[in-house]
Structures are given as C-alpha cells and as structure tokens.
Length: 205
Image (cartoon, rainbow, N blue to C red):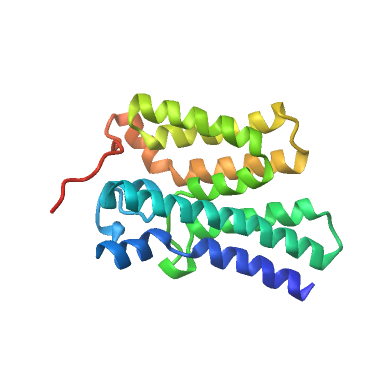
C-alpha cells in the first residue's frame, strides 16, 4: 500500500512539472507567465516562444498525463486491492491536478488540456482521436484554442460512452471535463464578451 501511495504522489509531482516555465527559461530566456494569458500551458507557450517552443511544451505536457496513468496502473498493481483501471484513472487525474495546481508554482499552472489529452489517449485512444479532430477543426476555424478546448472537454465523456469505454473511464471523462471547464472560467467570460485572445505569435520584443 505504501508503494502505491508513493506512486500516486509521484503522478502528482510529475504533473506539477512546469514544462512551459522550464523550457521557456532554458531555451528562450523568458517566463511565459509574464506574457499573453500569463500561464505556463502549451497555448501561451506557442504565443510566447513560437511553434518550436509551443510544440515542445505540448509534447511534455502530453507525456505528463501518460506517465501519470502508467504510475497509477503500477499503484493499482502494487496495492492489489482494487482494479488497475481505478489506479490508472486516479494517476491520470492527479497528473492533471498537478499541472493545473503545481506545487512548484504555488499551486497555479496551466489549464490541464494537454495533460488531460495525454491521459485520455492512454485510457481511451479512439475517443481521443475524435476529440482532437473536433478541437483542431474549431481552432482552425476560429483561432480560439479555449473554445476548442471547452467543446472538446464536453465531447470527451459523450464520445467515451459512444465508443463503449468502461464506466469508470466515462466517469473520469466527466470529472476531467468539469476540471478543464472550471479552469477556463475566465476564458468563458472573455468569449462571451468577444474579447478572447486568438492563438497567434506575440510580437517579438
């Protein structure tokens, strides 16, 4: 049991890893929290660092989610008292919480979209592919990543149900969608007011 708890704590710590801040500081000499939407996620990193930097942060955040699920799976195996899928879900959820409420950033962080995408890619690959397609179409049409992310979050548990995912995974999809939407509450206000930031590179200083 102690090993299982340690693995779940590790899932949260890895989720807390501030990819955008570290990549920004190491390779671009910038703190993404000082620009754009002032968070460390992949979208704002793209605005601040460009395609290469944004893609690196996106990949790192995706990996955080997938590693969280794997650690949760190992925790379930170590505990031996509940099905592995519950450990996987808990590990993934802790990775998302870590990304959004990072212990390294005074419990602040990104919106959890990329990390959440990594989690559902591990748990439910086919729904994830469809969700990504929906997100990509919306972003291409509107240049509003937040809108694509919110709609993608709502679609996730629905598509999990349609594709026959296990009920625990669907429940996770609902919880993850709620977390992502709550993290986008300010974006929702700006969308309603027509003031939301488009995804584009900020002017170079």
